[in-house]
Image (cartoon, rainbow, N blue to C red; front, side):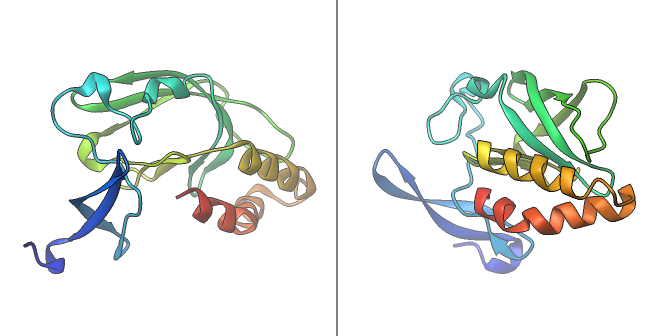
Length: 170
């Protein structure tokens, strides 16, 4: 049994209606809940609880890479291989949000990714994707209401206003 001091804790994950113990990394001193850590082999079948990651292509989501970016985007393309994932993010301009002028690529190795049904994160490189109509609608609505604030004040205010919704996604 690994001690907690090594940065891992035992965690039960529901797989096919059963509970199986796996070692999951600790993130911010808390164990990751319902986190998918794919096996090293069979990358074609990697997914979150048996879902195909590529099925997220075309999805609209909230992209967060603080302190600079917090905006609505579309997952344009997704490559999945033995190393990890490589996603093309297409920013969708909205009132009150600042985003890059063109599509860009984010990536993460399997050993650095945390994937759940509603959130994909690469904490070591500080990007997160939050999926779901509710969080996208909240960000769009709050951003329009805070558009009068300067951007350095607006982004932290938006993050605070959506913090509960982002925690719910994780």
